[in-house]
Amino acid sequence: MTVEIAEPNVVTETVLSTCRLPARRPAEVLGRIGSLETRLAVTNSEIDAAQAVRYRVFVEEMNAQIAPDAMRRRRDIDAWDMVCDHLLVLDTAIEGDSEEQIVGTYRLLRQDVAKGSGGFYSQSEFDVDALIARHADKQFMELGRSCVLPQYRTKRTVELLWQGAWAYALKHGISAMFGCGSFSGVVPEEHALALSFLHQNALVRGEWTVSAHEDQYRTMDLMPSEAVNARKALFAMPPLIKGYLRLGAMIGDGAVVDHAFRTTDVLIVLPIGSISGRYINYYGADAGRFAS
Image 1: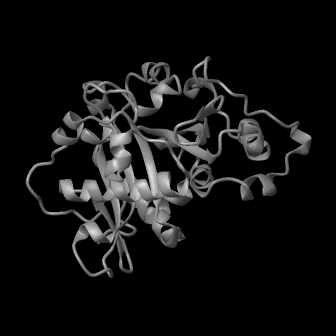
Image 2: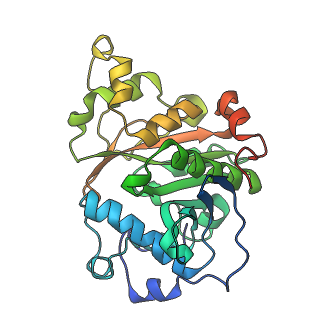
């Protein structure tokens, strides 16, 4: 996830021209369900196609505001793309090149890469530096830019995204994962039920405490606990955040409004040791559940 990082979403010809992968190497499939498979991008063309998927979801569907050059190119691009690994979900039933088969993507940034490259994307909104400093013996990984084309927003696709992230985390000895989870819109009060539920039931505590930066902090505790119906709150929650909760994730203190992407962000914190045994068993302690 980073070299000398420019401001998020600032795109320059230098950034675009230096985002280069080595020559094609064999693609290691991390998981497969039916015609869908997940693996890392292995060519620049695949990264470009993943950026096109992100553009369709974030800009065309969610009305995100990105840099003019990125708008012209119809790609969601920023400087982190140069250093991240790009996890893909492909539909192999689609005829054509792999670029045409990409239906979902995730961006992965390991701590060792971020440390030498300018930091994590989400540290512009949340004080993740303090969290990481508190765990000097652990290796963190940031998950970001998760998106799936509308017709593929199914349980199978979500399972494959997690399968890929889990296999990647095991391979690189990751101790904890974190990243922004987003609610649509820039008015946190419109999500009062879900945000209040998260604050009251899943808030980070103790050594995992992390907060939104003070100048961006928006309270999540918007309703009294007696008014929060858990079932309705979960129903109102974005599927990705709900999925993280099932895995055992915690939520940082405070939300942040991202005006460029027209979202209200919360920070997901998922220590590997907190992942529910049910899901470890489901995907396999060696990530072998859906491995090919």
